[in-house]
Image (cartoon, rainbow, N blue to C red; front, side):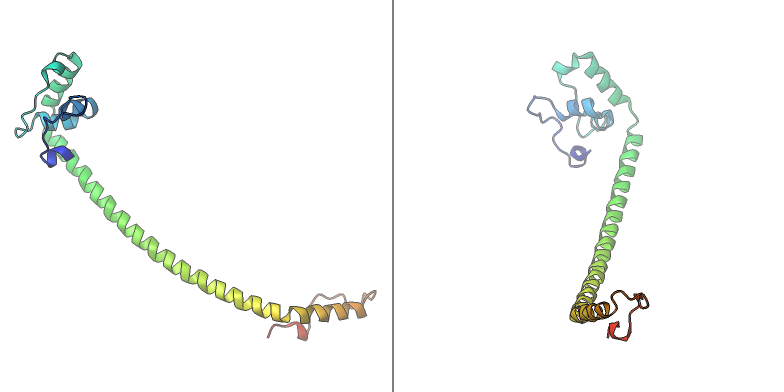
Length: 156
């Protein structure tokens, strides 16, 4: 279809000396039908390949297909491709915005974490000293085994 829409030389040959029509017949008979039935191209099967009954059969089939249906299908696929491209662009932009917001939220979380860590670290030695002294005074005593924080243990 690309070759047709760009009016490429359909009789140009590839490295195996085959024109595009031969590749189209081998890969997609619909494209071959568009080529075979397009008056602008006037393509024919090369004589060397026309002797092949398989190629001759494919060429005859391509000439007999309903080109209007093929063109309609190609146009529908092109419309779907454009729609998918548009959807992809929209989703990509939305995803980019989501990642920006996520990045901001994670940054805020890291800043909060750093502040909390500094605060805990600032009081950690005080808490260790408090619990060590209290545990030393109460060792062996079962009257105060509470794990509750007292007034000195609260974060300020």
